[in-house]
Length: 472
Image (cartoon, rainbow, N blue to C red; front, top):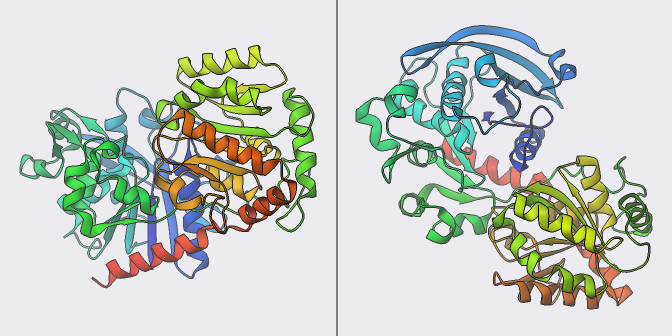
């Protein structure tokens, strides 16, 4: 099979979150199973000159954005055995940053239409186009409205993955004609609750809808999690699947990671102590055997930062230390700054996102806290376990699917159910009591590190779904 992954970001070229990791890793694993994958993303200004030098020009063309015709260049490059295509238009993509502009709708309308137009000019006819999140949600819509019956486009199936249902691409109805160029008789595909909703359009038009964990697939049928899309998703359950994300186990490997101070494995944890010592020295935390809780996250409400605010001082009073890395809403940044000032040597806070430091926190911490209100999949807990750092999580989405409480057989972490600070505190107390029992803690580390959350199992499920579509 030939699969084209369309995304607004992909490692190593452009990344702002977990979407880039998924799109950069999953196709590589599918390729290894004997299929052929390509990836297409915008040619952003932020893509480094080092990568640009290796790109080759394929073709230029024009793309319809409603009544306008816009220039589009196609570039090509190879990375890790995968062919990447880049959609070039300096007006839309030569900007500082990937998202957050007043015309994001028009930028990704252009991109989605360009992806389909590109197929006329590249030496790759996909069996499946796999689109990801709202930025590429119009690809299945445009395919059904304009391309399905064109010569050379017949038989293509569309898969759409919801990575985070909170961001849907909602705009006023005027964009239907002015920007999208969708005929009024097709308006029903995109109209929803008085708006044009790009993700809703993909849910209607795609042949298969996937989410990034089995639990998230049924959670988004509930109004609490669905941000308004539960009504349409309930009617489309027949094409909805939840497939757990994996991680790149070669990239995240405590045995070979050049960013960490000591190397170790599931059978020999000795290097982890050196990682902890080096982390304390780097962040100004007190040296000693007290457990370090790592937090690497965006400072936004649904990540559970409110729960941490309620009880952080109590946790410090239990003898715990914190290594925090993240950025986001000012109220949370100010809170963490205050805690770092109030508890020097016990609380370290680094604002921003520093990939190398994140690896050091994963490796040097003893526990990893993720009290999320909602979490479609979560990669951080998977990476933490890979580095032998025990996750403490709320049971939601992918956290429920990947972290088994130590109270049961084959536990690999600590869970709490309700979105409540005292329940989180109880899970941390249980973790601390096991940490104080060194043989039990070492056994728990081994359990966590032996968990297989590589892309292999997930890729097999995606391939099975692709084959079902091709045979339908």
